[in-house]
Image 1 (tube, rainbow, N blue to C red):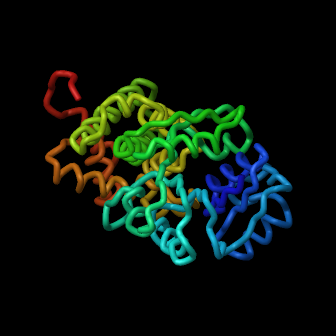
Image 2: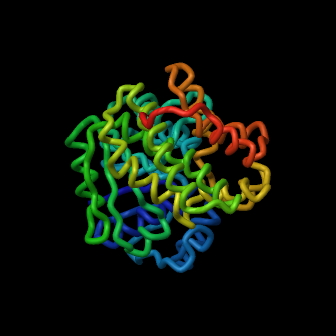
Length: 328
């Protein structure tokens, strides 16, 4: 079995390592020829996954193949998904595509599956990968469980079989809208969790934040037409817990720096990685306002990110909202 993985960052590299370790023929494509050449020589992604050896069977290259092949995984940031998909389409669309990015396209606010459908008009099977799965742990064979979602069950099952390994358990879910919404919005709550960490708050605050954050995500998802139970699965509460708690989470790390007084620009520069939750915050608010859905935590995160509101003031305003019954 041959799989093409696009995106030589931490997540793309981790998935390529996972696949190669199970005996598949894998080619990992990166944008920068110098970086991919160094990875090929050293057998290591020193910038994003230092200490993880690339299997000898894993091929690393730059650019893109003339013929993408049957199965493709796109592990590039949301802002680059359209560009890469368009480049693939110009070479002949693959049979199936799995998107490993979580978030909305900047500007259009489109989900990644919609972007891929627009660019890969030939009609390949499209799926997304979600769930609690930090690259740093997947690449080191730490037991991980995820979900693959597609509106086409056969496509979901195909990628389930491709990815399944002794340390990487894969479930399927046909609620594509719900999985993508959960995967995107948990990054916003993770920024809020990091802000709380940066301010020195404790477990009480974090527990409340995750609970009410999940209520927000579910509320918006249901308004869009998603199934409520999706948000209590791996793409929802599973990924939410991991992303809000982990030292590996770039969104939580950005939030922690904000809580310590950094500006968004400074926090982004210090982490050195794309925090998808920043763009998702803006998109989520716009979508929620169109639907008449209330997202109080997300609103305060946006004020901190884009209006430079003092995080302590934002928290005080959240705590001071009118008392009400605990409902979603």
